Length: 595
Image 1 (cartoon, rainbow, N blue to C red):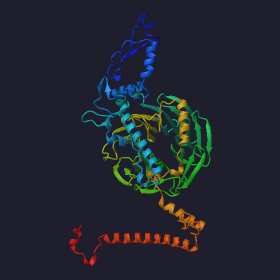
Image 2 (cartoon, helix red, strand yellow; image 1 turned 60 degrees about the vertical axis):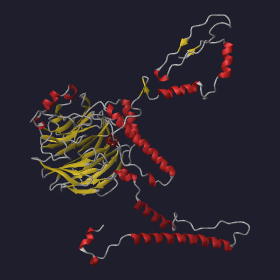
Image 3 (cartoon, helix red, strand yellow; image 1 turned 90 degrees about the vertical axis):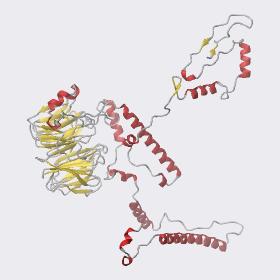
Image 4 (cartoon, rainbow, N blue to C red; image 1 turned 90 degrees about the horizontal axis):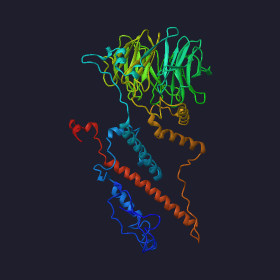
């Protein structure tokens, strides 16, 4: 160990005085092996003179900095004095990292410059590091998804809600409740994105907003008009109500904020959260988009499909799905006046449409009493199921469960895209026919609005077990909500970027670029991107005569001509090397086996 002297000398002048007791510095396990004690200290003058002569320079071998570096390097890889048998970060399975990756990697070889290539490589490293950190932090997630398991030989669809509430914990059991509202029903309903607040709208004008977990009422009004649909906007402080004549916007205290008379006869509404767009479908066959951040109408599209009473949205790409009475489902974007896709799904009219959270599967139900699941990547049917009573409302949960309201019976199916649904996962009978159906985000809860009020059902395994507090935090404070709202407005995606293929935004539209180039050439009268003609540089001392300039021009022109001839010869030789197919008249039956 090292000995540390006091502020003064370790005694009086040389030859007299008492020696003070030396204090030993504590030794840590990362500081290496203990050092031997130094000899007895000398007088201050002698010690100062010796230090001036023998003190090594900073950074040199033997200096305190160098000794400290040796101690740190010697302690690296050691735990409690022993070397770590597994140095470095723990390896990550590839499938866990792939779970958090988004999109494809950039093609660095096609970069136009070295600077751009280095920049793209740096971005790829950051994206890969973020995916690895997310995969490592997955071990720290506190919650796990639930499930419902019956006794041997027992079907889970026969288990009642009372039995599930009795077997669950107290906090989960309180999420099963029923609101009896017989006077103003049937009810439409909607949840906020964090899943904390509930909005109810009765057909006879009753509108109520509440925190359904604490059962605290935010506001309750009667608009004295027929209510066809209700939806929350970007936060729990604003919601929209489609009434008999026009569309109204209210705050969470029930105060009317705006009356949109251009949106008349609205039947269904869908809010696109990342674009701040409110999409409405009217009884006159018009699809309208309203930007609520600035209060302007983005697009008005005449679908020519009659009364639009069936509507859904794709959460992955913000494409609106409309169901029509002729059995077709059309996909719409605010940038195109014609449907992007038109699918014939049923022999009768379409009654309900729902798209899962990944944007891969779409479920439809029609008057032919069939429930069908389609793959939106190939627009092909995957599963088909005939129901005793046609499903009037459909809803996908965050973990892929499908709820179907068939009259006064609500059925929930599991793994519908993977295997044919022979029997439901859960079933519940309502007092009256269902009028609205929606899974609560981040909760194992299914909300159903019907003629007698509202019912909250427990569906184990329906919601995500863990939430992203930066995206949707159900426990955020007022200050956090305000900061999130400002950030969301700054990151708003323009409506012009809504496309059927989300990966199309990262590619170059070569056809459109060529068309724009041709239009520019026609407008200017010349090609601005064409290589200018060679002009010899003027030289001094008589070397820029007319003959010299002409010879240099001819030399450059001959070089360009030779380059063109060389490329054409290479193309001809490549074409000659390719095996030519024999004429059909000269072929034999054995030619098909030749490689």
